[in-house]
Image (tube, rainbow, N blue to C red; front, side, top):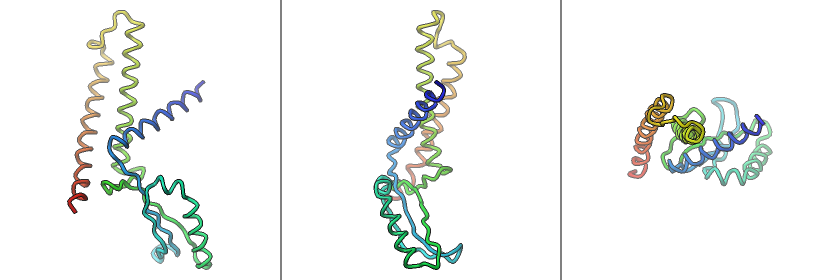
Length: 169
């Protein structure tokens, strides 16, 4: 039962992340560079800049290009580097980036709201003395949730600044 619950929790969190990305109007793109050499001596041979969805459907094209370039440069290591970003803002979507943290925070807010609603519904049905306005845990939870929402709203405003700059340029 535990594995099933954790799998459904994972799937639900993935849906929450997707919802957060849609709300933020994130356009997932990837820049793929195919290079050869070592360290500072590396040379970029080919670059792709495309929607992440296209890349995920056509990965074979990248593998084919790498194989072809490896044959053309047999004495060098041919490798790929990936840069995931939001096309609209130009911000990185790497795991530790601000934009990724914002998406994750919005998904966590959605999850917290769902749990709060489940808690309220459960107590309404099973606790005849339940009052959601005086329940200490619920009041504290709502205050914390509101602070988190304000933080997210401020981050969204900061995100709009690079988007406006890109539109004006």
